[in-house]
Amino acid sequence: MARGAAFLGTDVAIMAGAMSWVSERHLVAAISNAGGFGVIACGAMTVDLLDREIAATKAMTDKPFGVNLITMHPDLMALIDVCARHGVGHVVLAGGLPPKGSLEAIKAGGAKVICFAPTLALAKKLIRSGIDALVIEGMEAGGHIGPVSTSVLAQEMLPELSEQLPVFVAGGIGRGEAIAGYLDMGAAGVQLGTRFVCATESIAHANFKKAFIRASARDAVASVQLDPRLPVIPVRALRNAGGELFTAKQREVAGHLDEGRVAMAEAQLQIEHYWAGALRRAVIDGDVEHGSVMAGQSVGMVTKEEPAAAIIAELMAEAEHALDKRAG
Image 1 (cartoon, one colour):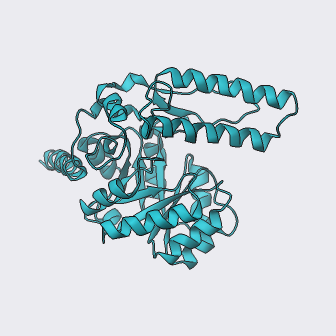
Image 2 (cartoon, one colour; image 1 turned 180 degrees about the vertical axis):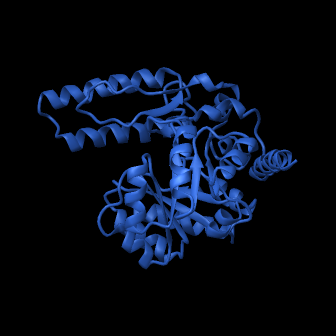
Image 3 (cartoon, one colour; image 1 turned 180 degrees about the horizontal axis):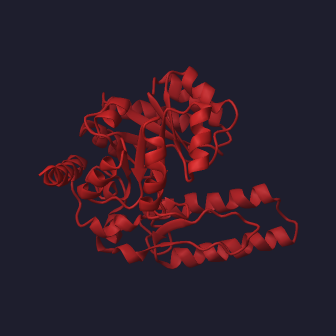
């Protein structure tokens, strides 16, 4: 973990997953102040909004934190400029291959680039393009997910990649014993999202937090793609009426495609906007029945609301105990 901590500039190599509406200044600063690595979820923020969010976070912590940018954001290059102006040290790119010129722009601004790699071939391509670190995230995670489990990705990718650059493992991690296992396999650190949703400092609505505390792993289910023409990335969330609403939304958009009322790009954008709105309804407004309660399968290990520092301390104590037992 020393390698990951040195790369992030933190006490421990625990990255926070970037969760739209949840990963804002309060939670990000709390995680960084506790020795972890908070990450602002830019999501669909405008350039001005991100500018204000970074400034507000810097006012709450003098520790390192990162910013997660979505590669398909129409103002990606302007968002990169905002990060550079604020001296953000790490930019996490999510949502697909980095567009042309984006990696160079991030590096020119003095930041390190962290990317997600769902396959070994893509990981190698990203490494050749000059990224600084990787996150490999399995399908147990909350939010948008890939098709392969964390344990399989780790077995396939860590032996091949861990000597080349820092690799952080994510998806379904809820206890320190799992962190110890991935460190043993060559990971430089881990990324967790679900465990931090119920942090005291999280601004998520009380209803949203209660839904997490009550849920078990089997309640966190992946959405289904209805139309093969719509390459909808599955989303893992707690089972509720919101999932049925998304199915209906897919039917509606597919119908518009059939009638020629929207182009494919617009259809995909409508799907993404649906998720952004549905998530806000749940996180901010507290409508956990009709909104999207995005959660990973580690949600069953979220049992109470507690400070971010307590969560990190517990994870590290569990990891250290597990490693001590292995050492005899």
